[in-house]
View 1: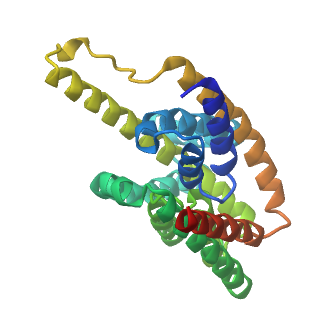
View 2: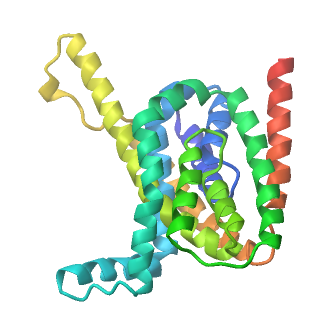
Length: 285
């Protein structure tokens, strides 16, 4: 994979991680369209996801700093359970648990059975249906804020988004809408909740790549102590990281403004279109 491929995939990741149209699904479709080995690019996906993690940390820096100060208060006797950021820390921890459990127990199985263009296409269509349902339900339920039960529900939807083609941001925002939250508030929590998920997924994939490299090296008679703990092409990794971070920052800024006035239905229509085109293309060719 060359720099051009890294730039294209960095742009795809930066846009689709924040727009509710599934970054994992579009990366798989993009890698397939570029003629790349989808299964062999899991390590490069680490760079792309870390780039969009940086975009979240920059855009939501006030919330991140607020949570850091709230957490620091635990060690100096100023832990305030009624503080907004203290509560936000708790909600993020609660919402992260389902994805951790599903990822550890069934992550490899999900990759094996759902990491294909046809599966992605059907999941994109299903996600579009979810958007329509969430928007209609939101019109009929009482407006509500975030609480522990909603954090759990949003976390369950985030766990479902481990399946390629199911948008993480789209599914978690939809869960918030189903619970009566506004789009803007649901999106804010969705992206903050996604930060530890992105970091954890990147770390898990990295450790898996190191383990796989070590196994191959040992089987070939090499010394496991001398293996590389950075089993990626460094320049390609950096290019993908930087591009996804810059594009991601611009995208999350634009999406937060968009959601103040418009619904998820426009994204649902896009998902229907790309999903149907992909299914038909696979069936025909």
